[in-house]
Every structure is written in structure tokens, then in C-alpha cells.
Length: 202
Ligand SMILES: C[C@@H](N)C(=O)N[C@H](C)C(=O)O
Ligand SMILES: [Zn+2]
Image (cartoon, rainbow, N blue to C red):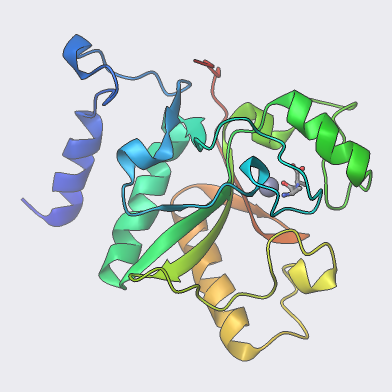
């Protein structure tokens, strides 16, 4: 069987690894731990640390969660990266609305933080991820800016940045789009799944 078909079969047969004894298929809207399905991913959940633009720990848990439907797409992205010796870095994933309000208090600028008073924001839908890349040994791949660099360096015009950084960000963008994600113009790291799910929070 060709590799791509084998991977699809594996995805279709995927079960919730946490409750494996139940053998129940996981609904696409179920929030699952990314690391359960993509062990190669580097989980660096910044809002679970003080290393973020607020300088405070916003999340009590360091688990990076996404809807299973979105994780299935991210698995395909990682499978292509495997062949290049690269790993995804997850800087943020599911973000509860309370956390969105805390980020908004510190940076009430809708260019860089979605306004939680207006809508259920993208990260709170469980289908949005803040992502970068490392090499196989965890060495960061050069990108246009640091995470949450709230300046024009972060936008997808990819101007006034080193050529390598532009090429790397564009490679990631092409791959994410191939598997059903759309990037947010003002932040090269922020991608939403083109599908939305009826989110099931554990
Ligand atoms: C705060 C930043 N990491 C981010 O995710 N911004 C977008 C616009 C959001 O808040 O949804
Ligand atoms: Zn984001």
C-alpha cells in the first residue's frame, strides 16, 4: 500500500489514546492532547509560563489541546515535515475565553489579540494553533520574528526580514494551506483550520 494511503487508513482507525480501553472513535470536536497524537511536536505552551508578552502565567495547565479534527490535519503536516527532518513547535493551541480576556487586558489591540467582547475567538474554538518549526534536535528554524512580536515583522508581507526566514515561513504556510489551514495576516505563526467543530471540552 502506498505510504499516503497507509497514513489515511491509520488516521481513520485512530482511537482516543487516553481511553484506549473503550475503543470509541474520537469525535472531531473533542479536545485532545496534541502530544498524544504527534509525539514529535515540541510543546512550548508560552501562556503556561511567564515567557509571554504579559510576563505572567495565564494557563494553569501545560497541556496543548486542539479539536481532534484539527489534530488529524496537523498529523499530516508533521508527516511531511518528518521527511525534511523538521518538527512542529506549538506555542499555543486551545485557549479558554477567560484567558483571551486576560490577554486582551494587557494588549487591547485587535491587530494582535482578538477582541473577546465581540465573539468566541479563534483559539477558543479549538481549531487554531500558533506554530513554528525546529530541526530534529530541537534547534529553532529561523523565522521572521519571535512569538508574539507585535510589529510589522510578524506579518505575512514577509518584508524587511532575512531571506532564510522568509523562505522558512513561506514553506510552513504552503504546508499548512495544503492540509486545510489558513494563516492570519498579521501573525506568521497563527493558523486556523478551515473547518470548525462542535467543540467538546474535557
Ligand atoms: C495573542 C496572539 N498569540 C494571538 O493568538 N492573536 C490572535 C489574533 C488571537 O488572539 O486570536
Ligand atoms: Zn494565535
